Length: 276
Ligand SMILES: NC(=O)c1ccc[n+]([C@@H]2O[C@H](COP(=O)([O-])OP(=O)(O)OC[C@H]3O[C@@H](n4cnc5c(N)ncnc54)[C@H](OP(=O)(O)O)[C@@H]3O)[C@@H](O)[C@H]2O)c1
Image (tube, rainbow, N blue to C red; front, side, top):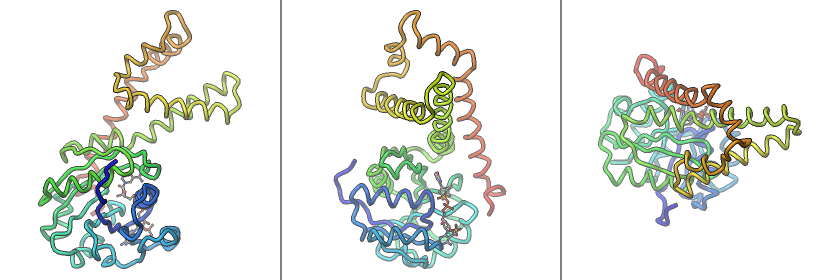
């Protein structure tokens, strides 16, 4: 978390991701007067307006007196939205894109101006101030622009700077990661149910186990293998379970999942596949 005053943000596209960010920032204590949400869906804007966010459907509103303009529409909407946004951008106003797979070079091409561009891969977990966000500076972006965005996302979880060339890997790991972990939670709960636990109890135990184990890694800084050794008694229950996971190739499955998602992100980033 940062204590400096956060930058003011105009968000175009307040859907799943943009909306999660807005609600997360509000819950983190950001002054709603520093946030603008522009979307074509009233049902999304209403709860934000009720919390004091400036809302509307005109692109110009997202730029009006904001430190940054964040584009949160689907990648296939990028050419239309960015092309139309260009005439409303204030001089030197940075554009922040959360659009998966759309490179900063493509964004610059689509805007057709020399505004600074910063690319971000966030998670909807920012809604709970629990997001893992990666930020990469693109054309015309200075270290200050990148820092402003890193600091903004640090209000709603952890936030790191990476090279743009690493964003596909980030997408394969933390971008797609929540879905992998939801699958793990569901499967653990299924195991509990198979072993005789009520579904609700099994789900609660599984989800809290994942949340607690994640916190343990982050807060101790210990290697996961060392933490695992601490809870694995010789001849005990845990090593019996771990042996089954190894036999099923669980480690390989996760590595392959991240690799496949990274490759798909690279494919989607090619101009002929991004819908533009
Ligand atoms: N969801 C995630 O977990 C996640 C994670 C990381 C990054 N992202 C990125 O975040 C972006 C948004 O994803 P999402 O899941 O949030 O999509 P979404 O729920 O569809 O949100 C996009 C919103 O933008 C609106 N919109 C489209 N064109 C517009 C325009 N010209 N002016 C104003 N609003 C417009 C859409 O309205 P309509 O529905 O009427 O079109 C929709 O409400 C994507 O580029 C995705 O790659 C998402």
